[in-house]
Image (cartoon, rainbow, N blue to C red; front, side, top):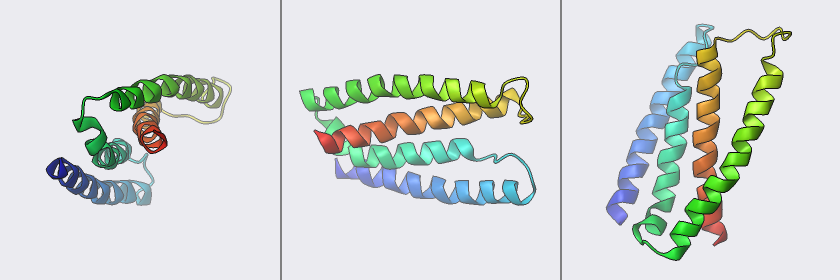
Length: 124
């Protein structure tokens, strides 16, 4: 149990440094941040490090945490879609490639799911 937690923490720290370096160089060069997905994976790794003791046991509490977090994340997902549609409508002056919009959506969704799991793990 403790080995998984340490492994997730190490992976999270490595990805955090990678995200800071990659995003920093992209922003300095005036480009879209290339390491956004790395930030989402960093949040996921730190979330899994916190959740490792909860999820090693296959009990009712772990199942409840998963179900509730995924259920609430669905509503966040719908909210993200509506907000992105309002921001990037055809009459908007903001011009992003669809790949960048999907990247933003994926980062928001992955982060939301794991942050919700951490929230509900603390709550139960």
